[in-house]
Image 1 (cartoon, rainbow, N blue to C red):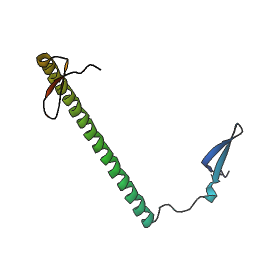
Image 2 (image 1 turned 60 degrees about the vertical axis):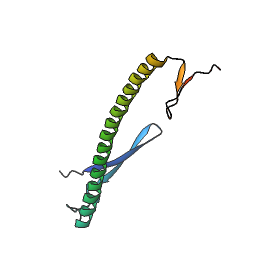
Image 3 (image 1 turned 180 degrees about the horizontal axis):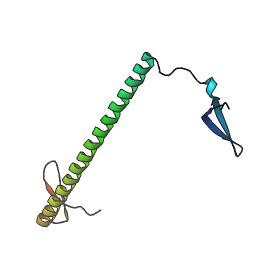
Image 4 (image 1 turned 30 degrees about the horizontal axis):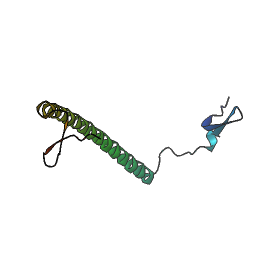
Length: 107
């Protein structure tokens, strides 16, 4: 008994029915290997893809490190702000450019 093999190449939904697109085995290419040119192009694209994935991973690690540094700076700022409030009070503003202290103006 000879079996006819069909290969599913896709499907789509139309009006609650799925339509399958199949290709008979006899319609398929007889080649067992892609050409050297096709292989080279495939390998080059894959290598570039892998480089970009690695670059994204490196950037994500840098981002993670920077976020930790920003968190540490925020903690340092909060500690210094607490010391300045204890020393100069809450009713002052400090000019960050000059260090001048001024009483807060009521609006």
